[in-house]
Length: 274
Image 1 (spheres, helix red, strand yellow):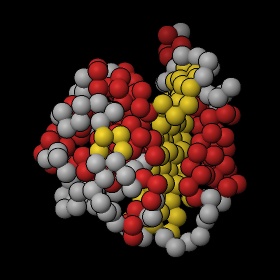
Image 2 (cartoon, rainbow, N blue to C red; image 1 turned 180 degrees about the vertical axis):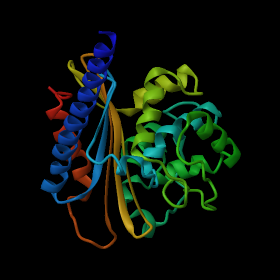
Image 3 (spheres, rainbow, N blue to C red; image 1 turned 180 degrees about the horizontal axis):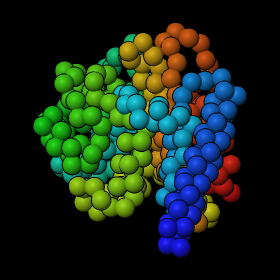
């Protein structure tokens, strides 16, 4: 009798595993379909905090690291605060007088003295480059290592090592860091963590709070576009990392806005947005 029970238990567990695999497969295919509908290459990785489940449109792509682009501003702001490079989000970064428009595009509306908070919100890359010039690479490396962020390759000679060079991060790793941030398990002080969370707020109402950061870089022959963050809806957090890519020079006027449109559509289907 015990032998029969053990066999039944093993078969039942195997059936559960198979069913979970089938359900995950269907979910992944459904998420992939959204990208095909919009005609873009990329993936979305989601972590449902309450159910402790990962959702993928492409489980392989979720593990592939690429340049973090402006999503690096999340941890960059924390490091700048923790090192005392800036005192708070209201500190003004003086306009240095020029920037490389060939690399970053022409955006005259941000070519002025700007607060750290606004620089984060409008993604004024030049401001965070000015901040980075004041932080030594070994200091960056130490905080990135303590945070489990990226591949820790800071060998890029230029100041903007998060847009260009070998320092990269995967969608899964983006979410794992955001999880640590949410749970207060980073090496950064509570004061600085709460300040960052306030700056990260993209939308908020009576139903939910959305914290996020976009990113876009042109490197290694491709455009890489990110939208990462998390939404807390009635105490149910969903963490997400969406990454699009296309060949440089390949036209797609909607590339920038599709990062958010695809993410929002999928999160609505999951009832993360009411």
